[in-house]
Image (cartoon, rainbow, N blue to C red; front, side):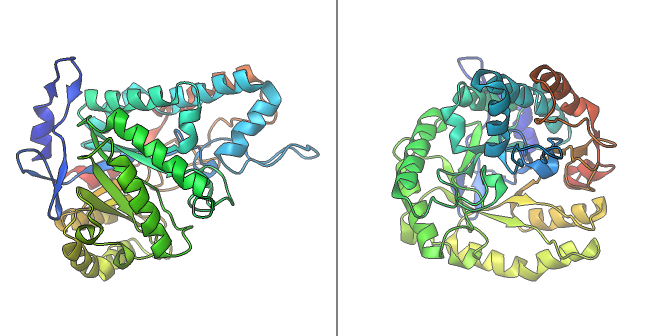
Length: 395
């Protein structure tokens, strides 16, 4: 079992925690000894990609203000920079990141029984001072506590969809400006060089939710270009290919594409649920077909995001995750924590603040006030959703 492997974590000659490298064998992720692995983890949402709905940032200007609305990561930090200058903006942004996720969070995730974290990041992270170093630190800290990391490019150059979680709303230019695709190839070539030989990184998630692709052919063409770029520096790393909600049946067969060590990633949400039991019903309605398509592709399946909102319950979460594990799939819940402006939102966030947050106001707070308030978003001020962690990983 994976937990036994975690207990036997080795130390490299450099004294760094090292986990067994994972690879693909048929429909399984396996260790070097061939032991199948079913990953169970959490997304570190809101950390390197701020989303207004799940964080305490005030996103509407005061009455009479000419300052713009905050809609996403880009507009948030543009507003902060317009008020305080570039150098102070960087300090405020670093304060956010130093408090939203700390080393104690990795320890807590491990204590909860999870075995990995998926880290969403934007392509612009590597234009920031210390951006790459922060990603290295996250991978090393996770490994220190026996956790794998999945590196998830949540926002690709130019944007792979029009959603705020790609970093900037209403862009979706990856598909139409070839220089964006070229930049993405260069970034994954670099990330392969940095992390390709690091066994603590379980996989590279090449592109999150690419639903902005005009058609499956364009989506698969870009994936193929990025696949070939990253293989120059990471020939053996597991690569995750997402369907962009276009249907698992639109994804290529790895043997025909001449792809190796590839797994597929789907995201499961059922926003039409009227009762907790509806989530399991929805899963079962497509599970047989998904397993059939997975069998044709002879590749592992990773549910990179799922949540049981609306109308959730720990019992329903237990039933859904048990069903996914029984199917042989790995999974990662969205998300580890939320601090929503209106207070807790059910199971959105394994951890959430019990009550309304201390608002972070980029319109009226001083730089000093913002950085002081950042301490309030540490998970030590939050509480777990009762019974949820045990429901997810307790059996």
